[in-house]
Length: 268
Image (cartoon, rainbow, N blue to C red; front, side, top):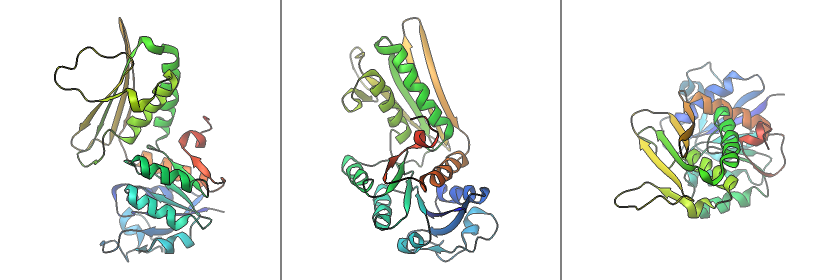
């Protein structure tokens, strides 16, 4: 039987891609789509947003409606909206895939509390390639140790509202953990003026926002006489959508807890 999936924020950039990615799979079926009240998408067939064949699914403005018909809700919106989705699903049998970034510490605490009662997939990036890259970054950091400086450079389109990207922060966390550091205390977000010598224990972040860049991340390990650069570039948002739908199908069979794409790929 196909997994019944719903998309919240169906008319957004990622929402439209998710609708298309669900249509590609034989093991998934679109059974719900929603958007914010007052949006032009309300009341139209979801296929109008994805450009595919008619789905028979009308875009709703009520989360409770799509929750009733779905095994998993996928949400790539904003932190407050994602938390509302979790609240709508927490006392049901519906799991949630969250691709939203930019949560503050209090919101993350709320998200983790929901995971005690329901299955949640929470990843900053649903690309299969990024997930494999995270594994490579951990291995490289463990092998190179403290003899190599670490800098993370990320670039996204002009419309992205949070910085650094959730993916860049996740990369920093993976590297910091492998080196036995706390990212909260060792991260340096940009530099300006007379900064003095680089502290060898820091992990630097640089952010670029320009044009229509979908997503580029480079982690630079720089030692004396050599440097290693591990880069991932996304050229199509469908990469993220396909990964999220794959994750949703996997999540539908899991118990309560919080998961990420490494769980889906069997890397942890």
